[in-house]
Length: 95
Image (tube, rainbow, N blue to C red):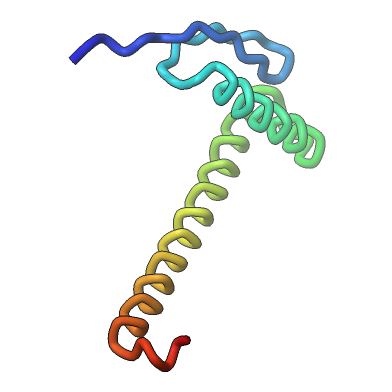
């Protein structure tokens, strides 16, 4: 297997620059970093948390968002599977 090309990117979070190597597209990493930075700024303002606490709050908040999205995805997959099963059993009723 050929080696994975690593992209160099600098992300900006809460006024700090972080150089990174990633196998993800640079544009995607920058988009994610902008989202994380925005959420961190929102948390800093709404919670008035100290600078060292904001990354922890952001990590917990983003993990919560991820879990919610995964739960919704699982629910929709189950719903789609049930609809597919019903269509196979009774194709005339779903037309």
